[in-house]
Image (cartoon, rainbow, N blue to C red; front, side, top):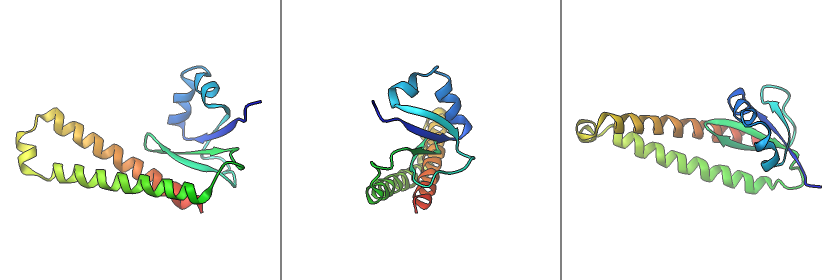
Length: 129
C-alpha cells in the first residue's frame, strides 16, 4: 500500500483542496487534511504554498532535516532576491512613469506574493527547529 501523509493547512489551502472533491488527496497521497491552527505534530516537513505555511506529517522516515533546512534556505534566498528586484523596479521613477498601469500593478502583486512566500519559508525554517 502507498504511504499516505497528513496535511496541516490554513483555511485557504484546505478550501482549495476540498474544492476538487478528493482529486488532490488521491494524486498527492493525502490521508487527512487538518487545520494548521490545531495541535502541531512533533515531526513535520513545512512547505510554503500561496504565501501560507503548510505542514506535512507522516513523512517521519523520509524527512532529512538538514536537507529540508537547506531547501528552505534556498527558497528564502531566492525570495529575498526577487523582493529586491521588485522593490528596485518599483522605486525606479522611469519604470513608474513609462510602464503601463497594469504592469506596475502586476509588479506590486508579484512583490506581495514574494513577501508572503518569504514569510512562510522563514516561519517554516524557524519551526523546523
